[in-house]
Image 1 (cartoon, rainbow, N blue to C red):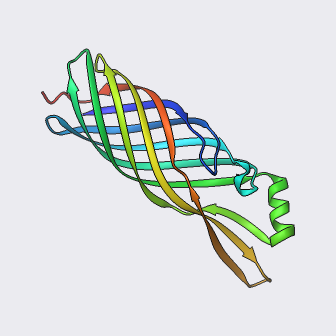
Image 2: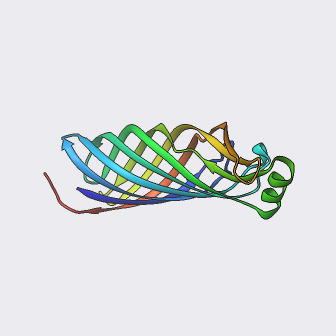
Length: 179
C-alpha cells in the first residue's frame, strides 16, 4: 500500500489554458502485478477565449484506476487506466460577468460534473520517485443560468471538451509492504 503525491503540468483544452496540477492517491496491490489506485487531482488555470470567457477555473478529478507494473526495486514501469469524474468551479472576471449579464441576462456560469476515462504510462525510480504521463478524456457542459424576471430562470448548456494531457513528477510513501 502506498500514498502517492504528484505535481506537474497539464496541457490546455477548449475551456482552460495550461496550468499546474497536484494529486494525491492511495494505491493497493490487488493481485501481483496488478495495483488499484484511487486519486484526487486538482488543476488551476485561466479560462480561454474559445467561449468568450475570461477568468480562472478550478478543476477537480476523482479517478479509480487499475495498473499493471513490471520491473525491479531500482526501476519499475507501469501502464494503467480507468474511469474518472471531473468537476469544476469557474470564476469569471468582472468584465466577463458584466458582459454576460448585459447581453444575455446570464447571472451564473458553471460546469456540469462529467464522467470520462484516463490512460497513463509511468516509471518509478527506487520505489520512491515517479514520472508519469496521462491522457484524460472528458466531455462536459458549460451551464449558463439566465434570469428572465424576478421569479423566472432557465439553465442551458453548451458542450465543452475538457480532455487534456499531463506530465507529473511524484513521490511515493510506502504505507505497508505486502511482498
